[in-house]
Structure formats: structure tokens, C-alpha cells
Length: 481
Ligand SMILES: [Zn+2]
Image (cartoon, rainbow, N blue to C red; front, side, top):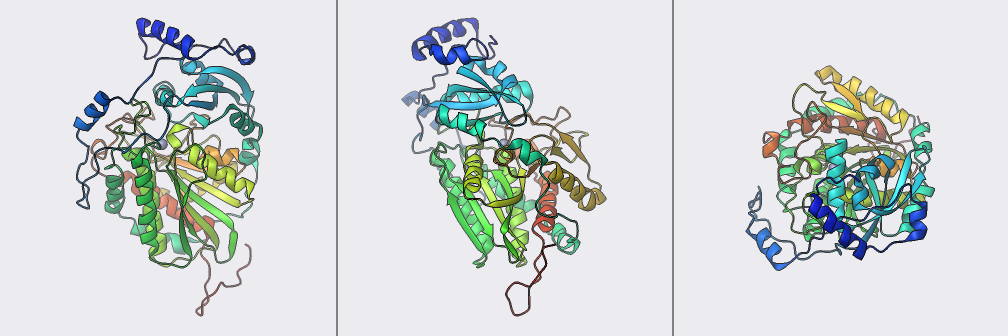
């Protein structure tokens, strides 16, 4: 048994508590890929002393750029820290977190990836994330469900193999340079900085904290203000997620004039987490890079596209996903809902961490796994056409099972791709999921995200295309290609 984070004494205590708290289930244990292990005693009660300690900790950015002061404390915890959570993770990751889960059963997804479904508790998800980051140098690493049956159904219905291999339903071409060339010079570092600064001024954007909800509501109203009353634009809070606590996802829709039923999605997750605070609604989790930078990149992309009155041929949806840090919950709920109602999503771009670059590394990395092959090739072609001439460089990395929200779309059978910051020479962002994930540790600059906004604009222009609009209004009769 791997006893990371635990001293021998703690481990012994842990085993005793684990035996008492988690009685054996022989039937399921017999199916498990190995003998199940007792859970660790990560019992973080939100007692009076703890609240007092949190209250004494000054907010990282007490005064926002708009002059208002962030409320110091969340109103209440929204979830039971001891509630069971059923995770789907890779067998390799399970090997490292066996002390934090129980009742593991072996499964495979449609790609043949060896997986494990196992039970844990809400207050252990931070430790699981910390293990995945520390040992595997990546984030995420699992999908989360409120019941074992839902986890089983998710694996059974997995369509990743099909999603990764299928030819793009839309004929993506590079023929909208006029729009891209008009947009790229408009990206402003200062605006991206301001959005990151605002989002990281909340004490956290944790899914089970009142800040998790208010920050999502702010994103919706900010996006709405950028639409400036355009009749083509609608915004909504997506709340049909059964395990997202009170955190909604945010969706802005810009309706296509020509092919309104073909949907292009650009997304980033809006929540944050501090891996050291177990389900504490008052944890300090500024999440400036992870993933305020992704939301800020999308926001600048949106601003530029909408400010010129752009009308796309395809429908475009900008999404801020809830509860990514606790098992890709918001994106999974949306992707499953779209699958059930037959929404034709022709391409998804995920932006999760865009602002950190340290040392001689590429400007951005294409994620190689759990992505659609054609869409990856298209992303490379886009980069080479529009960013490489600016002297920018690209690489490619694998990020493992369930590493970010693109995996939710892939699971649901949709073509998805992700562009990711290169980080440091180890491919790492050293401050992820800590109180130091701030603009200060990124040189008080959002310059790295400028490149990602430019990439997102090129992606947007070339996937959604630009509708030819008659001077009298109304959609022009543009052919499908
Ligand atoms: Zn993230």
C-alpha cells in the first residue's frame, strides 16, 4: 500500500477508523482488481476554530479592480463532506490512490483503457487530485458520480473510441482569413488580465461554496454585457447537473445564420480548488491560471467576435463549466444532456490553463489523447496558418484519462480538442491547486493567454465561418460547403 502523505502512526489510525467507518462489502470486494484498502482519516470538520482561522486569513485580493471588496467568507458548505462519491479513473491512477478509495471494480472504456470504478468521499477528492498532480504531473484524472450505478452506466455508454476516430461531420477548411486577420490584432492583454484578476479575487470558485455560485453568475452577466443586447445571443445558467452542488455552468449561445443546427463549442472550467482544503467552502483557491485564464481567454475571444457584430454560419456556444476540479461534473452533465437531445456538436475546443510559461518550452501544446484525430490535425493546420508566422511554436503532450472537460465530450461521442499551456520545462505549473495560483506568480501578466485568445479566434472563425449577410438582413443562401 502506498502511504503517500501519511505517517506510519496516522496510517495505523487511518486503518482503524477506516475499518469502523467503511464496513466490508465482500461481494464487491471479490470483483475488485486487488484487495481493497481502508480509507484514510481525512476527516475535515468545519468546526468553529477552523472557521475562525479561515476568517483571520486575509483574502489574497481584498479589493477588486472595480473597487468593491470581496466578501470574506462563504455562507455555508453546500455538500456533506462524508457523502459517498463514485469515481471512474484509470487503473494506473487507482494504484496510487488505493488508500483513499474502496470497493474497486475493474472496467474498460471503449478504447480498451483499463479503468476502475471505486467509492470515496467528498472530502478526499482534494487528496486524489493532489496525488494525480504530484505523481503524474497532470490535473483531473477521474469522473465523479453520486451513485455506483451512474458510474457503471457512464462506462457502459462510453463512446470515446468512436469520437476519437470519426471523420469530422463538418468540412473544416482554412478559408476565412479575412475574419481571422481582422480579429487577431484586437486581442488586448489588459482585458484578459482584468478578467483573471476579478475571478481570482473571489476567495475561491469551489463548486460547493457560495463563491462558486456568485462567480459563475458574474461570468454570465459579464458575457451578457459583451453581447450588448444582440438578438442573436442568449445566455443561460445550466443547472441540470445532479452533483454540481449549487454551482451552475454558464452557456452563451450565438445562433448561426446558415447552419444553426451545427454547433461549435468553446469551453473552459469556471471552478477552482485548493487541494489542501477538504471540501471547505472557505478554502483559499484563487485559481488564476487554473482556470480563470481559460475563462478570460474565452471572454476576450467573445468580446472581439461580438464587438464587430459578427454573424457566424454555424451556432457557437461559449461554455464555463462547473465542478471540473471534482470529476468533470459540469461538462459531463452538459455533454450527456446534448447527447440525449441529439444536439449536433461538430467540434469542441477546451482551454484549461493558458497563462503559464517558464523557460524554453513551446508556446502551446496540443493535447494528444482523448481527442478527435481530424480536429487535432485541423488545430495544427490553424496554428501553422495563423500563429506560426508570428514566430510561435507548438508541441504535443498526452494528459491521461479524464484530464479535463474535453474528455466529457469525447465520452459522449463528440469530436473535441484541447490546447494547453506548456508550463515549465517539466511540463508543470508548480502552483496548481494552491494559494499561489495567482497573477503575482505569473509575473502580473496575461501575455501568455494572448496567444491562446488568438488561437481561439482563429478556431472560431474557421469552424463557425462567417455568414454572408444580405444588406436587407436575413440569412444569405450560402451553400453547405
Ligand atoms: Zn483546470
